[in-house]
Image 1 (cartoon, helix red, strand yellow):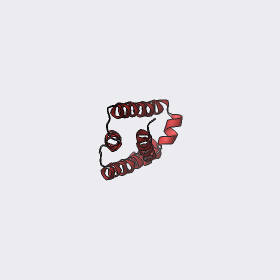
Image 2 (image 1 turned 30 degrees about the vertical axis):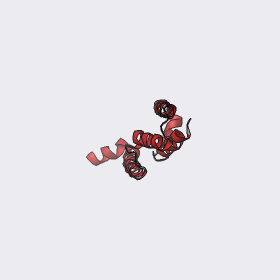
Image 3 (image 1 turned 90 degrees about the vertical axis):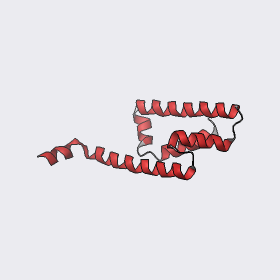
Image 4 (image 1 turned 180 degrees about the vertical axis):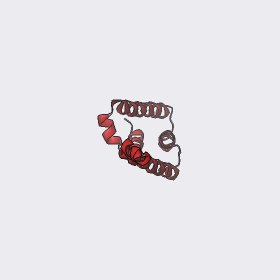
Amino acid sequence: MSRVVAEQFQRYVDRMPGARAAYVHDATYAAQMKFIRRMLYTVDLALETEGVAEDVRQRVTRMVLFGSPDPDAADDRAREHERLMTAVMADVRKGPASEEGAER
């Protein structure tokens, strides 16, 4: 895998709460992450073959993964996504028993 993709993909996974456990225990999640990584690698390889500079390739990879080519904006989006996912995971951990108790 190219260094460009490896670094950005690792940053993406590191920002996802529960990603490592999901990768190991959820076959669908693992397949989706492998697909994303392969797709990014293929795009990066095509760009590199066409002579696109590494900094541009990094921007393209950030845009795909984080929704922004700018490193600071990509970090901001990743932090916001991490915050939202943490909130969702907290709700999931509460489970339906908490909701049922609230209805009674």
